[in-house]
Image (cartoon, rainbow, N blue to C red; front, side, top):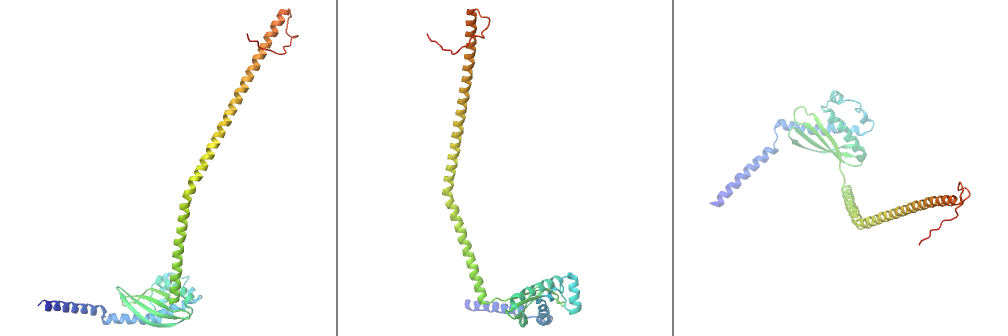
Length: 267
């Protein structure tokens, strides 16, 4: 009984799953018409038209026009409903892709997907040097307005491997450079204390030198002052002695007396 119940549940789940898949993949007649129109419009009109702007001279045709003027000219002269900004960026994308692709050769397989209010069409584009994939996005309505377009060159396996190797080398080189810088910074930690010690020693020596110089200057000034005081005292003493001698001799002045030297006598 349990096995039958489990089998019944699995069968119901499978039925619902198939129904959901069918609803996701099945398009209505109107939706299918829009998809067919988008695929045809992208591969037979939009890509060949934009491929003309891979040439340098042709790429300058709309360079001085406003977005509104681009929309009008493309719609009036070429019958394409485009957004001005989307068409302008599409020109830049196709023109820049020409450097690696070379001349435009033709288109190949076309695929599509519906993303909400947009129909995204991818067209294989053959180039003289390299192939690319054009992504053309239309509005998912009856107007089929171009909302975005870009041409993306397809890189070969060799180019992809070369880029991978280059990225690996750059990454490893960056890691080694950073490690070397870190090791240098760490090694500087042992040098910094030595430099600080030398700086402090120089400051101490300079301070000691300045202190000694100051003491010498102070001693010199004191000695000079004492010498000046001694000389002043001796002159005053000589004048007193000369006056005493003049008085004892009955002289009126000390002009004739000269004191040669003064000696102190200690008892």
